[in-house]
Amino acid sequence: MKLSPLRYWRTLIPAATLLATVALMAKYTYPLPTYTEILLWYTRLDPLLLVSQLRNGGLPIWAWLPFLTLLVTLLVGRVFCGWLCPLGGLLGLLNSIKKNPPPDGLKKLQPYRLPWLIFLLTLLALGSGWALYFSPFHLLTEELSRIWLSQFPWMLLAIVLSGLFIAPRFWCTYLCPTGLLLGFISRWRLFRAKPPASCIQCGRCTKVCPSGAAAPEQAATKADCLLCGRCSEICPVGLFDIVRQPQAGANNSPAGIEFSRREILRAGTALLAAGAASSLLMKPTAANPLRPPGALEEDEFLSRCSRCGRCIKVCPSQCIKAMPFSSGPALFLTPYIVAREARCELTQHCQKVCPTGAIASLPISQTLMGLAEIDHSRCLGWAEGKLCLLCQEQCPQHAIDSDDKDRPTVRTELCVGCGACENGCPIDSPAAIVVKPQPTRRR
Image 1 (spheres, helix red, strand yellow):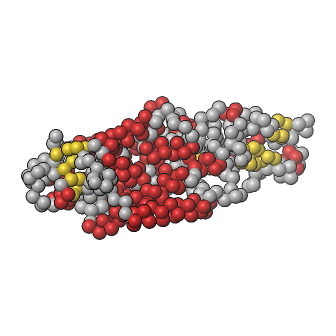
Image 2 (image 1 turned 135 degrees about the horizontal axis):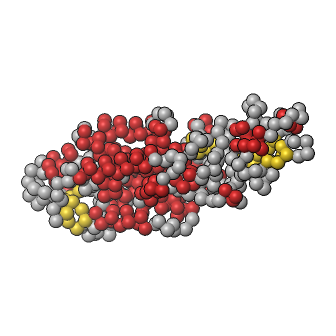
Image 3 (image 1 turned 90 degrees about the horizontal axis):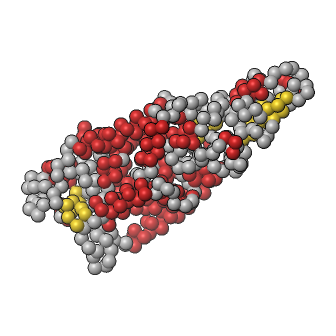
């Protein structure tokens, strides 16, 4: 079987996946259209998300989607990265504009790809959601969310610049955890592309391969092959062939894999580094921010949250914000609410768009974001005997009553911590009624 020229399709299909992701993110507004759930299911093609779910619970009902990605990878390699990944689609478009081959110096980074993957997977296993942040769907939507909020998309810019000035698929080949995972699995693929038997070793394929997978001297393509067809188009002697992967060698290792002492040492170092990093990424003891409605208990929330920014984008009152860097690396970019600035409208849209389950789908009656507490020394009704009760008027859950002297009191069994009372309090900051986050997020 020949690898046909794919010049137009390799541009149209990845561009369509990118545009679809951007268009669906643009529709993350109130009221949330039903069809935006497509982005949620599309995200589930990422096997890294399945790894996260397996760590935090049982096999989800959508597990067939990442298994499908893994099956295709085991058949023909990194088709997902080359054709379906939206961030890969962006880098593919850049490669069509500026055709710069990967420099030879990048080969020095090859031995460190597997240790980097081991480092990220270990972080994920130890309860840090940062590994998910670096996966393509979550990183791209977080950066799109930043753009819509008129913030600087620093990570997206760095990825784009690496594609323009270092190598077309530098991010996909050396840093993306999903790409590295699929690249590792691709070593066992059943079929691969190889140069025609009449190959003259001209090296043209190596100059156009965006992932550095072309290896005419080995009469093969490496595991990072994206099946983009560029090598087949430029070959002066004919089309590349699609053939079965050779059987395991004499040492029973798959082709291209050598477990040397250095590799074992690097893998061990990566494990130790991940252990040290996980301790640095532990939540500060005193930290207990007000999370969106349905958020899991803090430790589990941090292990699941990918910092994708979708809950921030979809929030109609813009009460959900990303935690600043000053909050520490464990909390940085995770969503939280500053009730004094904006109240939660309890639309539960954040629950519907969360791809990891960090914000669970719960009825409002079973949600406990926090509890409102009244400072009697500042409250107009309690301290000065004035009739105010604005907090009672603002509360959507009717969780604030008044006593026989028209002083507000909180009914804790009804309060969900939406912050409407704190947001509406007429007292200058701090408000006389404040929502205190609760360590238990669910009832």
